[in-house]
Length: 393
Image (cartoon, rainbow, N blue to C red; front, side, top):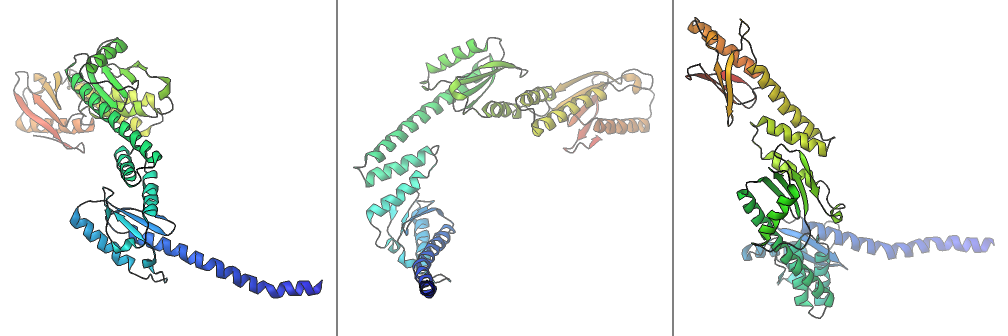
């Protein structure tokens, strides 16, 4: 028993040596592959580097001949190197294709077979996101060209050809919808994301109005086969309802709030009440959003500040402003003549200065406030900067 144990102990160093002899070269090889891949990937102009079984494929981000030549030279320079860790990169075949997936002649390709090149190209194409329709189409078209007998590549190519066709039809229909909506008196605004539509309508029969509208557009441009998901709002951005197939529920995400946000962001900042309605509607869809809460508070503060400014009283208790209205981004106010009578120039200047300060304190709801007298003559204006600091001019 002791002899057997002694024999095992004597054999242990030999077994360790054998294991190390077997694993270290493999680890070194793996590290060399990682080093070469990293060095090529660091070259500006290399879109992607793919490796498999110690073979490499570098995909460039250009098809410009001059740029391609420069990039091939840089890859070749790395390929000739021996790394600080002792890796001789020239032992690894590196194929190069331009952005159109056309293979570029290079000594770096070495002994790479056509079959291994196709494997590398397929690995690159397979990793593409399905939404990259153009890239997938280009990839499978090249694979079919290289391996025409491969039925799988042919099927994938047909799939992406159909996707391109559907995408083109959808884009044409969306474009026509937006053009026709701009002419439709019942449609205030229309926002679209793929097959999801958000209508802002003047009338109270949203489904009837939108169905008639979409059918009218379909007579001008072929309608996509996929059913639409529709959301309806009135001009004050009260939600009127929706018409959305159940198939959308898993993929809908935040599409409604995204489309509504797109409309709200198109509202000029000086349209205070419309912005308040917009952020109230958005907050209903996403009550926990700090962005919507902050924006809503900002516009409500502007509206409250405007009311506060317009309701200021004279020393006798009457309203300082007898009339006010807004044109675009400018507020117009008419000053009570009693506040101006029998005042010296110095007193009036002081009055206008105080008025500007009070306007700034009220939140400067509009960047410009024109001040007129009861006869309609302009007395001056309060001009504010984006920080809310105002002065009388």
